[in-house]
Image (cartoon, rainbow, N blue to C red):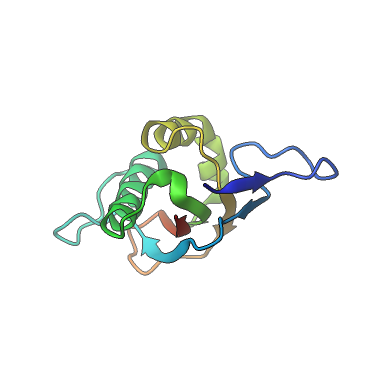
Length: 132
């Protein structure tokens, strides 16, 4: 099981952990960045919340196919073309997270980008998992 590390000398984390330690012998899985592409290679969802849910679902599908589960996520990076819009919908995005992952919060980063590979994509999510 992953061990979250949240030093008291840092600001309290909200919705993430400052660090995660993988157990000895864990298998590390690198999950490619996923956007809101459906099986037909079409971006679905008009807004950040809908696209976040599809991108997260896509990443979790790859994780499951690798033999892992959401609680195996050690690190997640989110790329957003509009971090202000992302923050404005943080509560709804948090509800999506809890619905799919629960209260497991890996080490995370949100990075603002000019654009993503697909012009219609608003968000891309990648991760690293440690499966024991």
